[in-house]
Image 1 (cartoon, rainbow, N blue to C red):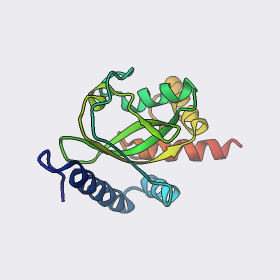
Image 2: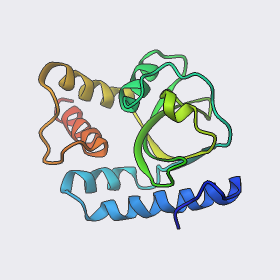
Image 3: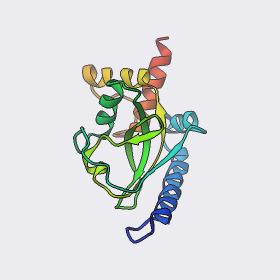
Length: 165
């Protein structure tokens, strides 16, 4: 089921999407906060593909979530997406990227340099991300019982934002 570098572009993207969907379905058995994210995201997942390297990206490697947040904060119709990306390694990895006018914009250099990447994710409202990044800036990582999980972080921020409305 895992895509390989030897696959055609269409086969690669089909296999990559199937593997990302499989990982999402496995998330339903995770910690309560991750399950809540999956429930919120149901019906919102979108699929994007890229078959050629995207050129220079403005962000920093290993900082995809921050890179995508900074691009979304910059405006110009840029939206923030979180989900899974599948590149040359062939395994779904939690990732964040941007979309503007329906077109994928990859903010992280190492991902932008890859020839083929499949993305499967959901748009996260900037207002939710502002809650999360303000907490990171002033207090550190949120306490929600899951370590280093971007989906749990987004769900935590959604709940925090709702609590103060």
